[in-house]
Image 1: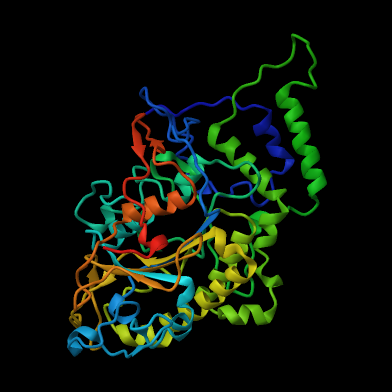
Image 2: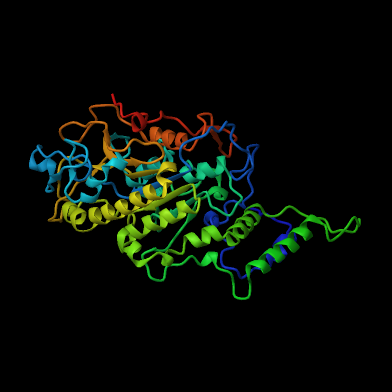
Length: 483
């Protein structure tokens, strides 16, 4: 197979004069050379300049925060308890009252129970995928049916054939050039051994639209983003001066009208784009400041909780304040909430208390600052857990298995009516008794909140249009009326 050849221009030779600056491979550093590979056929490249045909209308939301409980939160032990069900269904936790009369939630979510005036609990989300990788792709892209794959998990890993996640799709529709990334995911990528969870990047749109993936824990005392720091000896004014020189050389202004001016070649797509993004972000004080979580008062950091979940939510709030339109905060690591074993011990001792504390601080801060009016917050797992309690072979502590027929989530902000429950499940929290909502409906709701038209399409590498919005808006979030 012939290796592609490239003609380098002055942009590549000068490299913005900052070859040693950490940060030249910023949000699209995950391309792993894919965007530079030649593309054959008549269709556009995944990272081409083709834009969707859409008419954007004003929406309530300017930002969306997705809080992901990777592994799947048990609806029966959190937001959709069945206190009158048999013990083998209801589990070990008690229920406590909330600000919504007659609607209890788990005893280990006391702060949420007191603050449900901000939240809608949706109890009838549903889809068909019970495999973690496929379900995560479904949950983070809004596509009910993932790209066909083989029968084993190794065949279901992240691929450039995947549908783009929310942040990537938004970046395609509304590209930014102000140094603020369209999407940021934190605190770490969803990886377990050889398995890389799909739904984390831009899929067929190409690495150009990948969200910026943070790979360190904001709860770590040494947390910092090295890619937003200049190399020793390089200052912001010097960076700007070098960029101006580079632009003058590439634009030919230093060569005058002479016919002997060297011919300019087109820059390598992905490399040049990375440099442009790097320059914008390195010279943007807003995004660099947002990551200075160490500048928060100790009391503020304590409010969120001195753990990965709490500090990830605090950092998410700072990114939203800086103007990032799409933030995804994963609560823990891959499958943290996958409670096949010791379901009640893990939820009681770690998971629910940390989530409860972090969400309480987040929602209060967003409300006090006024940002809640323009920020849609969505708290979800990729699915729920089985109604029946079970114990895995070789284990002694029981838990619950995967369940996608119905699961619960939280919504708040950007016009969502707080203090309500939408959807009702049966006596086992196993199936919806009222209207269910699919990932496609969630996707449509999120992008409608952002003001994206139903006509928005994403063009794949073969030139085919893919409609972004394939569901219906979850109107009860705003009206309180359910069927």
